[in-house]
Length: 299
Image (cartoon, rainbow, N blue to C red; front, side, top):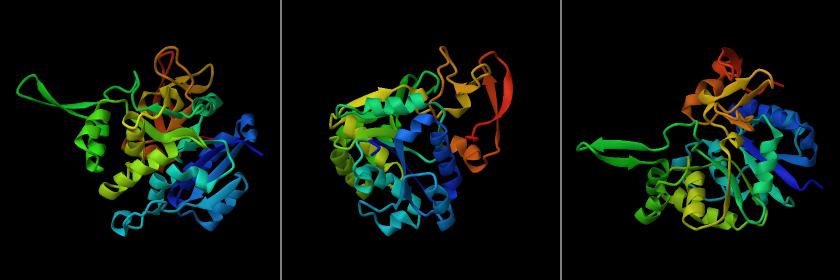
């Protein structure tokens, strides 16, 4: 019986990305000891047939917290914002659960090991959206010369999701935890607290991003423990990547140019790459050249 599981979710539109994620996981020999499970939010029968040959189990995703049809508007893939807070319900009998968004792929197994190691002893294992290579993490609206109104993703989402001003301020200046990749043990305290906060967010705010602000509040306000991993474990700043010709791999842009663990095409800036697997990116090498390179996983 495999003890650890990697889980993702997709609809038919994200099938290619999901399939590439699965292939990237299975490209590592170490994956033989790790289960792969898929949550179906609108995959076709043919797509599920392809995946079934590669993964351990596929189950339909539910609306585990009731959400109005007005907010859903037929977008069943939004179940990913809800169902990831209930992973042990879908796939019981595992000890550790690692969620990876479908628009990501694994470049180094070291990151997988760090996520599973980091979630031990009742901790959330996660990376943040702040890194030396990412640039600005807050925005400021300047007025009257030297005065500024600080704008942060955490504050904005907390307020729009119905949380109090006190809670919104508590999370406002904290590094934003990126729930696109995270790991928790089956018996972690976080599940129930996350679900509690998610119910509040879904009732008052939008579905998109609800699970992320709910987890940020779980850590920063409810005080549950987290192991913050390096950004290379969930790299979202795609334009800032560099390429190491000698190692033939994607790396951080600054010394020591650590190998990227998980490449994550999150955000509108990466729409072209998500929509076109053959999209060519200009990428700088660590020795100063600029090369043309496809950044989607290629088996």
